[in-house]
Image (cartoon, rainbow, N blue to C red; front, top):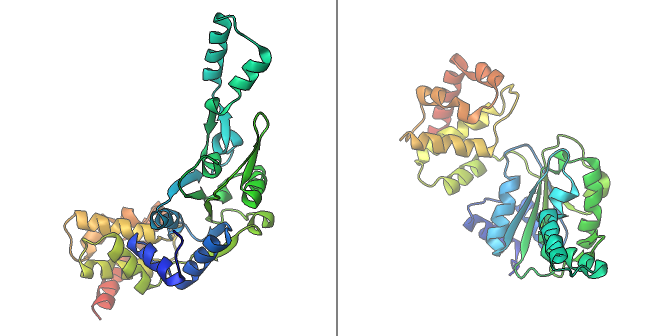
Length: 300
């Protein structure tokens, strides 16, 4: 059942431990009401992928994920034929001396031998449940694959030469994400609603961590969130996202910490910083100063 209002949608997402500000909630609400794909851009770790999972939970829908990468093709994204089973079936026909070319082709190129990949699963007319289709990190796919998506996003259909055109009777909610490793073509963006997801404010980050790691002490959450906010202003190769904040708090909770100090921050720095150069930049006196500032700020 679709949310009745933007506030209803925000509450449903909150019930899935996802904190969505009004701008994101409005874009998502419109995507649901208008039946349009939602294109999300933002730095890695700000919650783009997590939104799709939260929406699926909020709508009681299936989450179907296509992870994009260089060289992704139709066989891995849409469909392929189960050639091994087709060959076996053909040999059975031959052994029974019942090979009729036209009948064999009709039987071998039927849905019984079709392997449905994520895109076809999402628009399958036989689907009985709603679906959220996540096309993750589209910026990592090739230009040719982007072009193939145009038919899908415009008409929610794909064409299989041996079977014909397959069109969704219940189109999925499509969410595309991009980390902006390259520019995605305008033709694809025009078919979508657009939303940029930025790093959260301190208040929002506190709410996210409290929702996702309820076992952490309020003091620890406040200190780690303040420290991560400060780290984002450092000259780093890879700025930590919300996912790193969550990982850091979870790691400290696993170490039975209820507050942050220099030693625990130093020992777990690899949880939040994922480049050697960044660790070298922050460690030592700089980390000590950042921890002291975060501790003071969280106590104010």
